Image 1 (tube, rainbow, N blue to C red):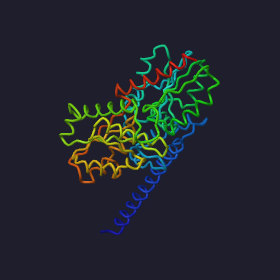
Image 2 (image 1 turned 60 degrees about the horizontal axis):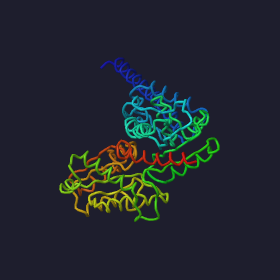
Image 3 (image 1 turned 120 degrees about the vertical axis):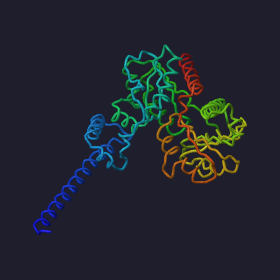
Image 4 (image 1 turned 180 degrees about the vertical axis):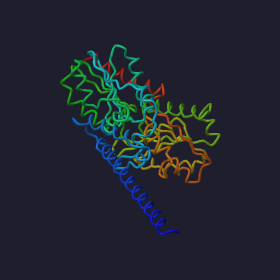
Length: 386
């Protein structure tokens, strides 16, 4: 081949290589910029710059090419932050309207960035509470600023945090405030909620915090109550129905075990999970097991639950969240494809013929909504007595 032709081809190859390298560098720089913007709003504290930061992160993400979006990686940032489809946000209602009136029920949740679950589970509870209390105004607050920022940045839906919701109530002239937590128990989130409300007590004529879903904790694993029984029956019935069985006993005859996965906590309230296991036993639900993502209490960690289900002889497993929302924990920690998800670990054990997941939160179950309504009613009664 002619030397000039060879030289020309080499030069062309070099230009292509350099162009490719330059483009790759530009792609990485653009992706890194977005990752930094996401990490900046992945925080638990709202500032006077939060609105601006949320908008900037979304604008920068939208400007990326599809290839650049796949390169987004930071301390907490990844392509799924903006890119994951979690459903239709328009079905939700942030319930942050003014014009509240004198009586308000503030429904407080940890929150979720999963749109479908937020609409079905959290908004489902809020709508049920509003329907049961037509003369009161129901409003919303989330305690997780990280989630509030995520929803705002991705969907432009603005949800009040606790301080914003309480400031809104005071500014609107609310006299009687009932706070209904959607939290499962009297744990760390409930304690933080109580502390936040206490700071605003003098702004209202009366303030009452209603019971969380499982009611009072009790001193040890043997203590159960009507609330825990109601939740145990509700979630088991829902799981059995979703699995297509006429009854729990029919599922047991088919070798099916139901595993309800909660969050877990190092708080003293972690005994609530042991109490739920006790409640299942008292109801003679032999093929129902309680686990937790955090593995606290110890008997609820995944490996111990796998051994318990295996020892009981069940060959089919159905996993379902023992959580108000079917959000990140349900979709990833429980039903995800990573090796450390509960589904993957149950499959990897080789002990079961099938492992299936029901990604449904507690908040969408009518009988669970009824329990929240009952707790709210007790709080409203105490307001009227003051």
